[in-house]
Length: 93
Image (cartoon, rainbow, N blue to C red; front, side, top):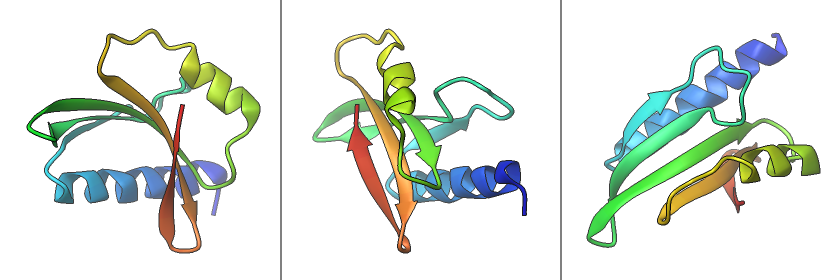
């Protein structure tokens, strides 16, 4: 299995998890940028936007810096989702 295929499968898995939580999710297919998924959904009584990078391995410092460089308005969250031992580990950025 190629790295691309592995990454795509994890992106779909993360997307499905977010949809199950009530989010609307847009996948940035074929993107080489720092954002793989944009999730819009309810949380704590207000709309929440999450910009997510999906990783099969531990995120590198460069991954965090790229995502941190994305300008965002107040209230938008940047996260790296790492698939580890059958569960998601979420790293806020």
